[in-house]
Image 1 (cartoon, rainbow, N blue to C red):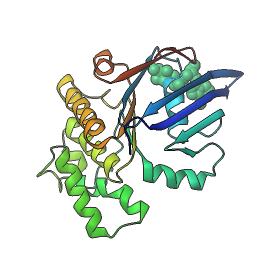
Image 2: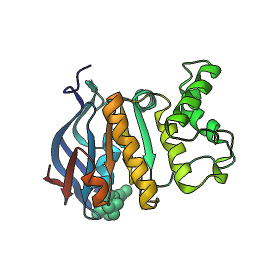
Image 3: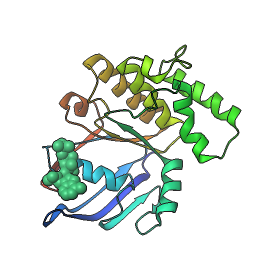
Image 4: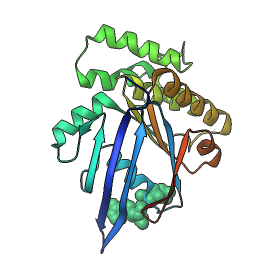
Length: 228
Ligand SMILES: Nc1ncnc2c1ncn2[C@@H]1O[C@H](COP(=O)(O)OP(=O)(O)OP(=O)(O)O)[C@@H](O)[C@H]1O
């Protein structure tokens, strides 16, 4: 697949919240994200970044406009179809990693692939080891998640996001909980994934250094794109 194909296409996206009064939180935005692009989304608190990411991730389906990922029109698909699509194509990394604390790093990473149910357990385990190795977590595989450092836990969360080999990785403040050294390590990992494997990375961040490290930054203000 060529690098200048679009992984993501957003057209005339509008979203309302109705709590307590109806207001337009996303006011009609359109953009494309290319394969292998590392994109950051920045903007003041309340500008609509997380809301946008929820729509892009297909978790929020209550919007107007259209969303295509890898050429598939996702707007209007059923929750079941979207869940399958997400599991196969989109990886998530959050500020708080939501690992299962009593499960090992390896088990945490294997879970999304077991859930997908497309491959035998031994193959999934092998891929989980590979994924953890890629994130420099060799030797930590069998430790319980709650026995790992914050930076290690976040890298386990990234390994988990990678296990199904998603075309798109989305992060909501993925380094928000890390010190600058660990944050830089995570940025480096994302950059390499984009460059080497052509994965498309989209991260909401408050961190200007993080944004400066990405290929492209979309700045949101009041539900619109202020700068791209
Ligand atoms: N579920 C909801 N119901 C009603 N209003 C909401 C809901 N979620 C968010 N909002 C409002 O929508 C606006 C955009 O919120 P959003 O979380 O997208 O902003 P953000 O740019 O991600 O902010 P931050 O940087 O603080 O995380 C805010 O005014 C917020 O109060």
